Image (tube, rainbow, N blue to C red; front, side, top):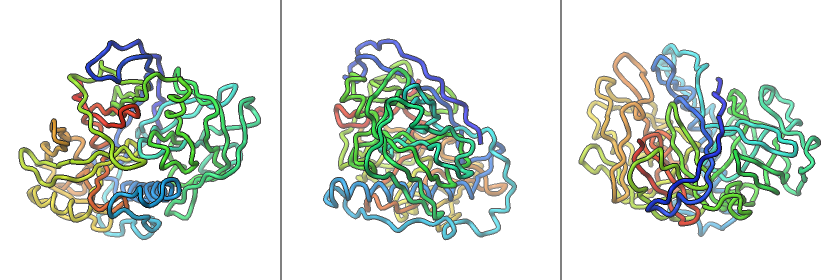
Length: 420
């Protein structure tokens, strides 16, 4: 798979808005993505989807381990737990539906932009993830084939490199880990430069990352779920005064996508941003959500976590089963991984989420993960228990692509606005 490298430009000063988050110097990171679950000719890539389910389950398993270590179990949502390690071999599809012809996704693109680490700068293509809190990239000491096509950090080539005690490690269900030593470094994203940022140049990397062209991950969630137990990059930028406002905004789309650091980009949305207070610890989590089909509220009163590092929208299995009962002629496609199908001739175009204000609709294109037969397609909402809480949904970019999303550390809130 190939990624269109993110272009980075310095933004102009934004005019003052009703929202307090648009003042001061902001920086744009632009990047593109096309959904990696749908092939170029419109088929659902079942194997890839299951790989993402396994990765998402283990990513948030590690987040819960980190949260327990950093904050204690009292920080868990009701019903949250550290789930068993998900294993791909146990969840992999084995039925005949996987025999559908699939087109190579050579044009697949991810939410990624270029950052620089070290002095002089070493450049990396990075996935910006609101569902994790650490920065890691491959090290020159990573000699496996999975690192062969990636840019690698060399501490010996940087005058600002400083090794620290400890180790970074995340375990994945294919028996592999992403792990490495801990350093502090100068890390620059566009015009924002942070000194003494904790990160890991990893020596081992999971095969699930090996085929992707992005080099690593920069987490944008809260310190409470940091594996390193340190301040994430954007929080460090705010504390060092590299950004005035502890706010960032996302537009995710097939083209014209952007991460705006230090405010929101009012040229990309209309009206005011509708903000909701963050609840809980560690995650960009907001309560009081409802899911609707048209004017009918299907379920309400649940928690939601907004995660740019995840494509799929996950809900508790029973809740998702009840949701699909309201979509005519839908049926279970993969009970193990929680995927449902519906008639391709009538893709739902009126599925929406609300937090008591506006109703934010998922477009038919973003709800449809592609065909599995001549007549049936797969929905973007899957039933899966990620251990985040008994009444907690995880909203990935299949939701975020429909709105402008704003994340405020200053006001401890998440907001949405209508895209232009």
